[in-house]
Image 1 (cartoon, helix red, strand yellow):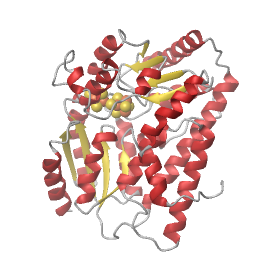
Image 2 (cartoon, helix red, strand yellow; image 1 turned 30 degrees about the vertical axis):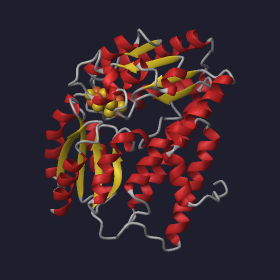
Image 3 (cartoon, helix red, strand yellow; image 1 turned 180 degrees about the vertical axis):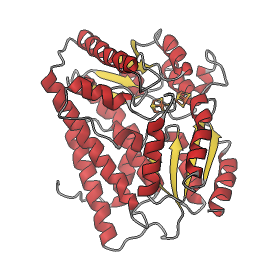
Image 4 (cartoon, protein in one colour; image 1 turned 45 degrees about the horizontal axis):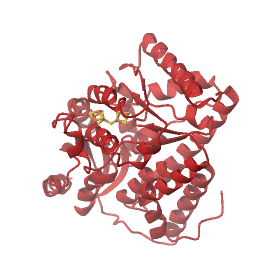
Length: 386
Ligand code: BJ8
């Protein structure tokens, strides 16, 4: 492990919380050095294909309501805010990451995104991956494999590079290393009491995607884990041992939807884990380093337990495992407005958790802050009855 960082914990948390903004300058510098940038929206996109040839992947899912008004000039109002914000930032030219992206890679996850990509294609160079919506059929796997190979060809043609097996294996190893460190970090909250609040955990998980150097990221994460562990061993207990332990599930969180974690923790509970694309859904598993790299990527990504899959047993498997591991007192789900797949799957999640005697509540929200008080009232009532 690298030498522990000399920064204090508040400095470290601040650096992750500020990472999205700080990353703008880092990316500008990288562009000036001639680096290619690929913007993505979804956990299903196999970023190892970009990392293998030195391209920089960056998440474009915009997480504020700043440009939703702009998006609504073209898109319907009753659409998922994540989709509206993503398009809005491109249309208003207000997201530096979108601006710097030479290629944007979308995926056919949900209907809203599929149709939004058509419009985005008029503004940016967009490549859309055809994602099957089931994981158990040979035809789904065959389609996904074909799509990964089609993306490889597109990247090679667009950037004039060759993705060799050797480079791909190296990228898989590097990405696995980052996943393992992030998992190690959030698993610190297995302890009672956890060594940090769920808001701090979220800021690290969300912020880390805007740190673009693998070596630097590894060093910072190792330093962060070591600082948190040291402080805990020295008796620091920022979270009360009586705080109810909550797992957050549902749509991706971060940016303005930090409000979801805030209302939970302001009610006296602590978020110990995120069963969503900002957390465990992204970092829980590893890409098999011993297999053929394309087969390994195909299996890894196809098996992500998102509600766009039908059926979606992998979400239940992960959620159940996290509930046991983190000794959850309750599960709260965040569903973004008009996200049909997560909204419908709520029922299945509730039934599944009932069999384990774990209280569950699903709450709908959007990217405004107007519903914060209402969310707080409902979260507080849920926590009160645990
Ligand atoms: S793998 S969670 S990042 S699709 S955009 S489905 S909120 S209506 S984001 Fe997601 Fe990939 Fe799944 Fe993860 Fe609903 Fe909105 Fe669609 Fe959304």
